[in-house]
Image 1 (cartoon, rainbow, N blue to C red):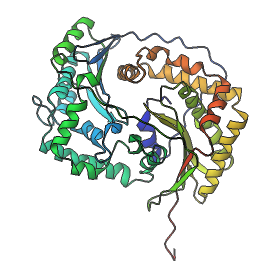
Image 2 (cartoon, rainbow, N blue to C red):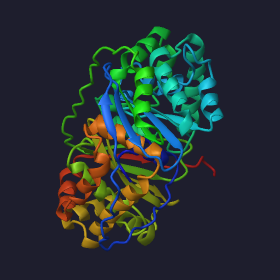
Image 3 (cartoon, rainbow, N blue to C red):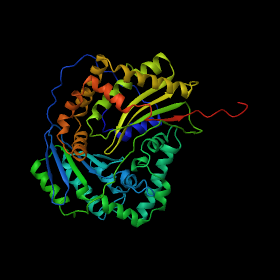
Image 4 (cartoon, rainbow, N blue to C red):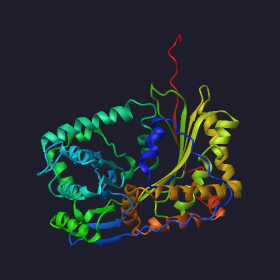
Length: 455
């Protein structure tokens, strides 16, 4: 798995056991010669960063607008604002009637979506290439003329609260991510999750929403990436025409994330009446996503639990038959990170049993390192993931924008695989000992509620 799939994975972990990934061959594979992804990058005078990747293999085009604003930019008493705007920006604009953005895109034969995480909010359109002007018009309208009125705010308040009830409050393990963030990132803006609190959304006044939009949804806080079938010079003119008149916003003050060293383990039980099976999550603080150790940690996570031949799966699921499923994952952000191990136990298995088995396997990899076979398998999996993810224009646009914003180098779309393959086998044992410490573990457990008396 790549580190760009941040929120999706943890949400899936919280909602249901994950399927097992297919295994890559553990023998070294010859390097796949991936064709370089060419692009042109430049800034408009108002600060909008533009990345254009022309590919005329099919008559489709993808636009991707990445705003450098997420839940960590919120006040502790106004959480959920960034996620709220993910919805609110579909309401309409000064020149687009309410509820028409979806209809315009679907009517043109395209699709659309948006997402929010701790560090970013993004919006994308996939369309036939002759509809590029439509996409640019809508995105420029949202950046310059977003409609933020009482009707739209009240509508989206209801939508967001229903989403929280349906996807988090009323589902087994639905609060896993929220509780985990409180433990691992305590005392920082990463301690609350993007869904935020319905209470704060209800309390906020209309001017607070308008101020948030004016502060963050500005060209000098955005990256526009376009990938697909288009004429390069004509597209440059379109981008200048639609986005050039939007005024630059004020400089943004970024939150500082400082986590003191963790000196003792933390354990917390979450008591929920709808917990069907015992589940446990072990998480350690990890470096931010641009740290060189991030690549070794991701490979280590794959070795621990990616697929049926992984250590945790073989031990907890196959040998001990104590777990229904087990996953390890790196969750690395702009200013901090974590590495987690999540297991859903079989009925009748105790949480203490699950915890002990995870601890044993983690200590074993710290003491003995990984085998050559495990090391090669992890490298092969990573190379296969890069090869399979480079085709879609929407993925290319997204990756170009993210590499620019968070790494300062959009060309990592062509070279990041080399960073994974530069990780040595001994690096995996080194990062295991550096980060997976006994005093630095945070254990979040979901016990099954006791049966009522007499049953």
